[in-house]
Structures are given as structure tokens and as C-alpha cells.
Image (tube, rainbow, N blue to C red; front, side, top):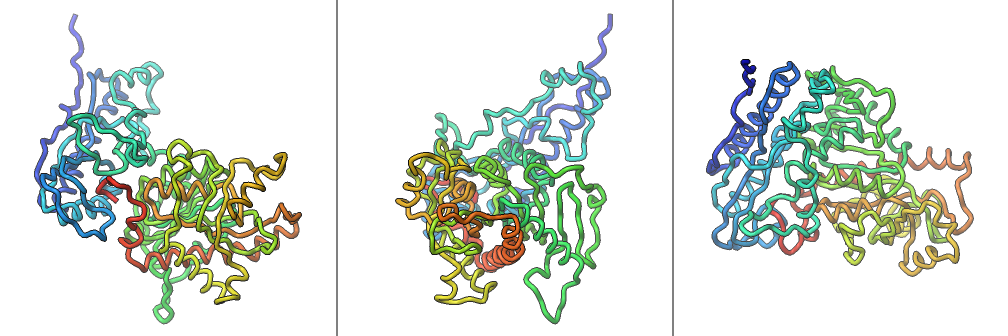
Length: 507
């Protein structure tokens, strides 16, 4: 009996390490290797769906490597873009279409600071089939249950063992002879988070911007959407230029894109469609060129959501993220509607205790603190002592127990008093701690919405009035703070304060 020949699409693509002496050629090689690998997997899947017999199919990520034979004296002011010791350093890379600007910057800095060539080639890290498919490719849906079960034997599937955060956590211990890491995240970890972002936010990661606002209330999102649509309907006014004049699109869940008046639509805009229901943590994006705009995510209530979302947004390497939300005021001198600028955090959220032990301090970042205070002053038109009347800087406590007031013996109240906390919520410490952990500049500006220790809780009518009066102003403060941060040096924002003793070169 004759057996049907196996329909191998081609040999697994392999590119031997190539020395690249400039950043553009290194990026071009990464792009070529990655595209050849994903094309190989996509073609193999098409054959499998068509019923063709296949052997084992594998394709691997590109890697970039630098060999640093001698320690070099680099500018002591630098926070990233260099390796601090002799050795071989490398990382796997993914989605060079999405991360082209980021990779180009990192390659340029390595070459500038070390004067060595970069090696780019095919790694040994396989690409999971799930990560090779485009967002609008769903050919696997046509598979029978039997052929779907065969996929595990034919293709590499996501391997969680390749996705831990040991590098960022400072617990990674390279094996003898293994290269040292160049980046916080391996390619599989990045791909995993890109898929999770799409799932949780309802928006393709391509739409995320380099400045991120997190909130715990839909009211802020509603106002952000209103502002976004109003801006898209206005043509830039040359006579009265605005900081938002260079915004070109507004994106909502389902990849629904609204282009600015006068801006031509793009091919993929037509594929967007509003989802039948909002995703768990919907995201909205005020888009600028080169991802310089603002993304806003409603993370909902609780530290678990805050950790989940910031875990995944971190792989995008944003320039900063800020928390805007409501809090309980803990001081009798505070009034509903007052602002709280966090300069320290009490972490009773517990979701990061293993990755970032409680004895690790989470410091305030001067650049972010100054931007937030300046934004409050500009938007409220208050200065000096009058500004202090509505803005208080102090410690924010975050808890995983929404009903902490009901615990017996006043334990939480006593601890919060001892810590000098002035406000309490459930997300801010998590967002800040994960910013510290992943080296993403962070900040928190909260608005006092109730004072449970002093008998002031929101009643329905009072709550509606409070939201109407404060949400618009609070959001405009957050947007202005980001404008201030954007206008300053990004290199200054990514300061040395977030870097450890032995740090990776990539930002």
C-alpha cells in the first residue's frame, strides 16, 4: 500500500547569526526572520486545515545578541541602553511590526554606548502557533475535533514555563554558559500579554499608546469618550493651537476607529465593530502618530484586576502610567471632591507580595509628582495656600478588603493611622508597585468620594452631583499631566531610580 506523501510546507526557516553594524539593518534582519517564521507556521496550518498530512512543524523567534568583551565607562546619567559588565547578552524578539520604533531605539543605544556589532539570527525558542496567527485569521475554526486534537502533536503550543517574570523580578539565575538577558520580557511572554490585552480590553494592542491612564470608574471612561468624539469632530485651529491638535484618531472596544476630521481612514478601520457587550476591562485610545497619545483603561474594582492589566500593559514599554480614581478620605480635614497626590503607599493588596516583597519601598517619582501638581494648579486655577485647600500629598493605602471598615477591633484603622495614610482605595498601590517592578514610571491622583471613618458616605443624589462636578475636572488634570510629561525628556522620565544593581539594557 502506498502512503500519501507528507505535505511539508518547507523546511523550518533558519537564519545564521548576522553581524549588523547599524540599527536599521539589525531591525530589518529581525523583521525578515520573524516574517519567515510566522509565514511558515501559517502555511502549515492551512495545509493541516485542508486535510494534508504533516510532520512536526516548528519555527523560532529571532534573537539579538551583543558580546561585550571589555567593561566600558558609559555616561553615569544613563538609565538604560547599555550593559554594565563583560559578557554575552541576548533576548528573543517578537512583533517587529508593533515594536519597530522601540527596537530601533534600543539597538541604536547599544551600538552607540558599546561600539560593537549586534548579532541577529534565529533563536531556539519556538513560536507557539497561537502567536503566529494574525488577529483576523481564524482558519483553525474549520477543523474537525479529530484534527484539532492533532495540533498538539504537530505544532508548538504556548509554554508557560517560558513566560515567567524572573528577569523583571530580579530572581532570574542564568545557567552556566547561558547568555545574560538584554530585556525584561522574552518573546513568548510578550506574545502572551498581547493576546491577553486583546481579550481583556477588546482592542488590538496596536492601538495602545505610550501614556496610559488607569481608572476604577466608568464615569471617567464616559467622559474620555465624550472628549474623544468631540475632538475628532473638530479640525485643528491654526489660530488657537491646542496640545491635542496632533491627535488623529479615537479607538474604542471592537477596534472601532473614529478618524479626526480631515484625516483619511486606513484599510483596517472598516473591520472594527462594536462588541455586543463590553469586555472585562475596556480600553480607549486617543491616538497620536508614533503611539505618542493616551490610552485609558477601566480596570474595575480590586487589586487583582489592577495587577492583571498592568502585568500585560507593561510589555508595551509605555513611557508612564497614572492612576485616576476615587478613594476614601481618612482625615477629618478633607472634604468630598478634594484631591490626593500619593507620595507613598501602604500595600495591603497582597497580590504582589511574592513578586515584590513588602519590605521593598515604592518611591514617588519627582518628574511625575511635579507634573501632577502642576496640572492640578493649572486646571483649578489655584495657587499656594489655596491649592493646598483641595490638594493634599500623602500616603495612600490600598486594601484587598472592600469592607475593611467592618473588621473587628479597628485593626485596619489603627494601622492606617500609624502609617500616616490620608486616603484608601483598592488599586493604586498595585499600579504603583507594578510600575516599580516593571520600570514603568507611575503616579497616582485620587479624588475623595467618601469619608467612612467620619460618617460621610455617598447617597444617590449626592453621588450624582459629585460625579458631574469632579469627573470632568479630574480627567482634564490627568490629561494635562501627561502633556507635561510628554513635553519633557522621555529619557529623564525613565530615570535611574527604577533600575536595579544589574539591569538589562533594554528600557
